[in-house]
Image 1 (cartoon, rainbow, N blue to C red):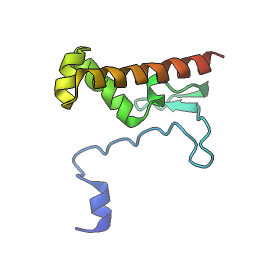
Image 2 (tube, rainbow, N blue to C red; image 1 turned 45 degrees about the vertical axis):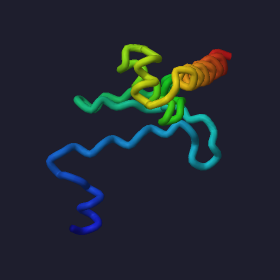
Image 3 (cartoon, one colour; image 1 turned 180 degrees about the vertical axis):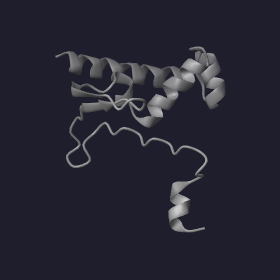
Image 4 (tube, rainbow, N blue to C red; image 1 turned 90 degrees about the vertical axis):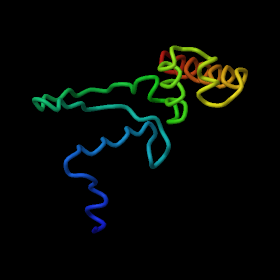
Length: 109
């Protein structure tokens, strides 16, 4: 199999969309969205839009929140799912909550 075909993956399955960066790769500054396009009709919306609050979390923290929601918001189930103690899971959630509060505050200033 050639390198090109390895990178393309299965031609019968759509390739995953790359994740949206949240920080500038050159200076680590905050990024904003300036253009959105409809995949159906190619309509474009232009402006300056903030990234959604949850997208500003690390991939690990986003996965944590998604798992937490899928487990019905149960810390007990989350601890079992992750193989961690309840206090560790609670502390991790508290840390993410603080990050969200800080980010939400910084975007409303």
